[in-house]
Image 1: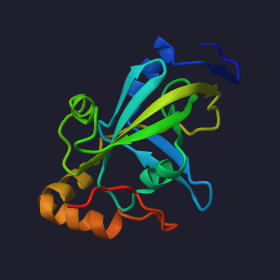
Image 2: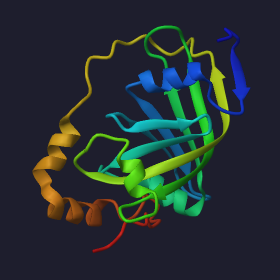
Image 3: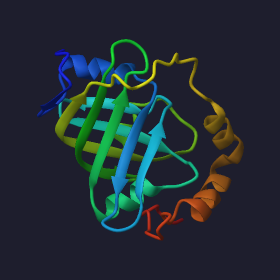
Image 4: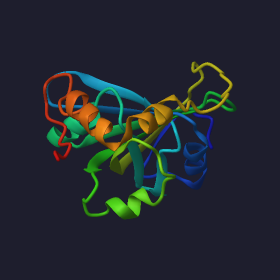
Length: 185
């Protein structure tokens, strides 16, 4: 890879795919036409590269559901990966995303790519139209210890009924009051 300060590419390369697959953390950015911009950190074993211009990531129940609400209004999404170890690099994938929920076309096939995670809520498929690298020379060096299992343990303790009730309370609307499209029972 070139040591230049940045490149724009039409899709990911084998080198960038390997970089993505090695990252324990990525960030998701979305925004509705009005209201707050959302940037969320994502971990767990929740992202797969399907090809140079497509990735899918698994979303589990959390304290909010901004990504879903934003995509229902405007399907743009950015994923960002940072090298916290090794050579510096920041990688952004820009594109249009679609949400998949249980029962939707493509749900089962995409879900099969991931380990079973308690609290699984949705999948997001990003069709990438631009890949951008930047230097990452100001990103700190940090050592990865281990994934956190707190969210998985919390979701397991809840069970299906309580997770549904939690989502109804906390995940149906965005911070700006936009619906997230979660199915109702």
